[in-house]
Length: 327
Length: 306
Image (cartoon, rainbow over all chains, first blue to last red; front, top):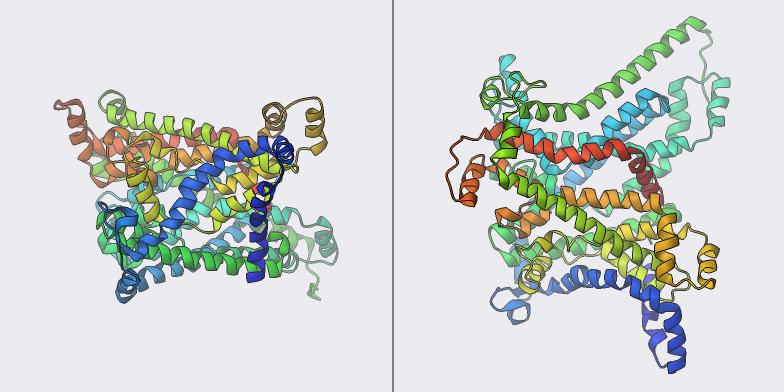
């Protein structure tokens, strides 16, 4: 692992070399070849410096008692106090559990749904119907979570919602969906499947299109049924990509989709036991309760664990298929 | 591999089973496709009805009492809503053009093999995808040091460059034959001229895909406004939708404060906010119909190269 990362850092270290102790004429030659590309990438470099690299140094805020009037450098150092406070409260366990559990829930259900849809779509490839199915199933991917919130709201709102009207017609008591936290793992899973399946199936479909038709022809001659073809040819061919997808997704285990967990449950306090994740907590602690220390500590916790997870997942992917590793 | 039952089955059995299988398969695909479309229909139907009908029949697939009043009110009485569309449109156009310029310039520079700092800069970009400082430092930087709170620029600047898109754009430029660019260089064209007159025209499909995703990102952005915008006059449409969903009365009140006079008409808030949602989906659905091919190809490229 450390060998990998140091190999990546090495090119960055050569950064300084072209400038160092070169005679002026050589520098001019260097500038002639590299000046334009350097100037071209400069706006991007500066942007990332300001909006990505500067905040990285801001991590020290988590180790300070930050006060707006004293600024980052003026505020008092308090060591690990924020972290002690965080991990002694019940919050850290709750948001970690929710974030990680939802990650696995969505990964497994989402992958199954995408695989099933891809297998079915593979059978109707090239028809007019296939284009209709694909257009319809793709559309949800492009919609913002605010719009998704409106959709869910029209189904679940207490008096006018479609679900409760339906329950009433069946003679069942309507349910106050936005105050009962036990229903939300199911609701959020349905929402992610609705939104992501069409898009997710593309990847598997692309792999299926790449399977040589000769395999299927040979199987047909041997008298294999459709099911046998899927079970013995298509699925085994998909195993590598499934493994890679699972490993890659491990890298984002500590990151949750803010829109899904904040907007869709309408930020209702009674739903926090099952909807509060790291990202929503960081936002609320910062803006709503103004608890800068707590928010910064959770942010660092998320960044550091997230970084380790990305490195681990990449290491695992590299062992399985170096072509697909990020670095 | 396949074990065939010793009792040979008649041809008719296979024809029937094959037909039933295809029927079932299409039924599953059709129902999932319709399930994807139903929420759109419910919201469209709710925007085309009256407030009373909504209370009486609830949300339905088709409007029970047809009315265009919600749309009429948006276009005549609620300039705050129209303004939020303007904010979103402006941010989308300026943000994605500026972003595409900055990102493609950077990507082109990285695709040039003669560029000595190529690997260093690539790693510099790549690292931003692996590690981030988190929300609090960014928030303090933007509000306390850059003083961007409640400024239109805050909706544009922080999301201008995406490391991932730069790296994807680089692969598009790398597909251009190096000899072509070198030939232009020998003919006396500078890097800037090669970029604008050769590299960009040759990578249009790739650039268009990324441009579409960038535009989509700006149009759908809600989080930036949630963090940094308090002035109703600067709300982008997605944030406006959120505020109005939280409090139905907010619009009437804010509209009065904005114009300084009492709005005589009681606004049909429930259908109105659904009409707003429809109008926010509009450009996406419309654009989607035309560029679907690009999107799908772009996703395939992205997922396979990723």
